[in-house]
Length: 133
Image 1 (cartoon, rainbow, N blue to C red):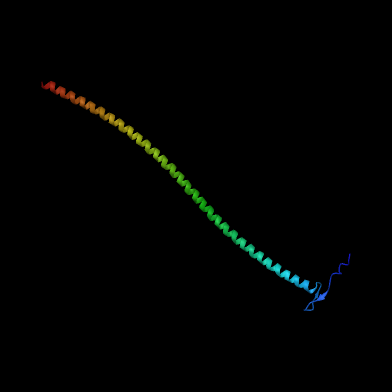
Image 2 (cartoon, rainbow, N blue to C red):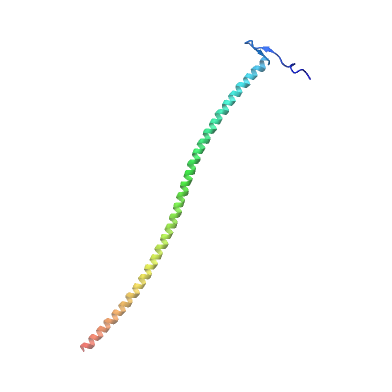
């Protein structure tokens, strides 16, 4: 193995600073540093964009959830209204049946009373004819 410092070259740059890397490697390192800064800046911008996007999605999710709950409430109201209408219809049918039964009873009573009246009128007529004769 060679000596560890055998590949190291010491040089001076244009500003008379001592450099361990040769000039080309030093410039490449500077370019790499600048690219890393640009990349870090872009990653920061991307992170901000992602955070903004997530906030927008959260806001939309809340709106959607609110509308979903409202829609469920409306559907429940419709279902309840359907049941209410069915129950009212059943109540009306029962009332109608009760009134029809009452009508039938009253018609029967009317017919019975009309027969009694006719019988009584016939009896009165018969008695009137017998008394006058």
